Image (cartoon, rainbow, N blue to C red; front, side):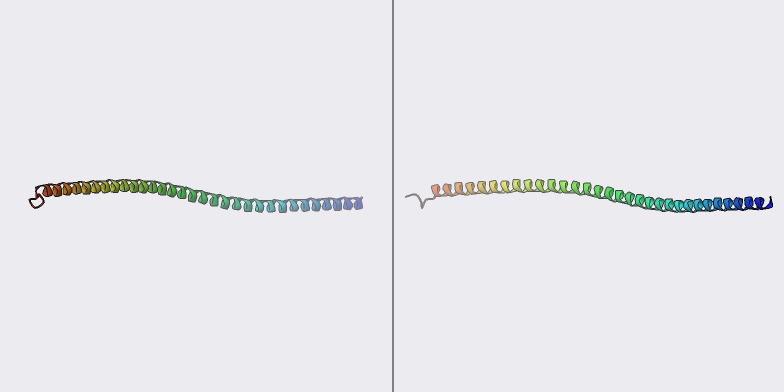
Length: 120
């Protein structure tokens, strides 16, 4: 009976050791899983931060581009208005020069008509 009790105690200790090994393996797997999860969370946080920074950069670039487009449109409009003003001024100068030429021609014709030397 004592040997049977010793054998039962040995089997019980072996079972207890096997359960302990299984629990230790479980604890190890759990610790590795927690470490992997922590690393994955850090990678995800870093990716989220990079994504937010890129979105911010793109938003800033978009605002800058819109501002540049507005400035370009205003510059083109100003240039067109200046060109139109220059054309009007050139047209006025040409008309004034034409009128001056016609007035000189009329004056010269009047002088020739009334010049006593020219009448014979």
